[in-house]
Image (cartoon, rainbow, N blue to C red; front, side, top):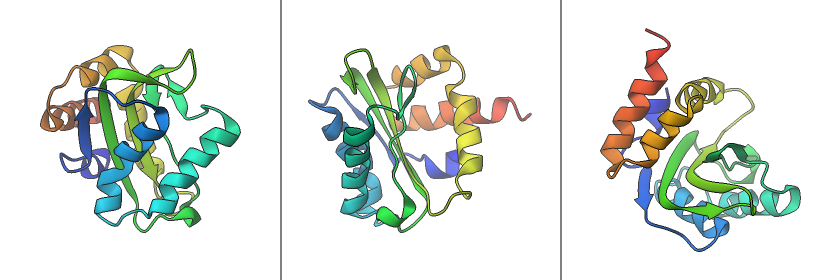
Length: 151
């Protein structure tokens, strides 16, 4: 399921961004352009982090911003921004991968999260994704890592 969501159209690579808010806006832009989310969803993700802190940094180097489905999700979707230089969500939380999760309910995204866990479970795999220079390379790594445990 993850490889159906994270495609070359929803993956971006950038050298750097100035702030974590900019990172979320840039990471969300493919979903906004595809009308899978609304602008208010992006603002809801930013507001949630401002209110609750960097709880979205779930593992070193990786953040998974999200908000409630009612805040502007039109279709279940994910996007990924890979940064060559980290953005800091907190002083001790440098992030290279921002994976936007736009869920339409409380359950339909769970399989994608299971697949994502397989990808992110090993720090070496995370570093391999960060080292990619093209979205197509990230797609191939995700396909490989998300399926290797299931074979």
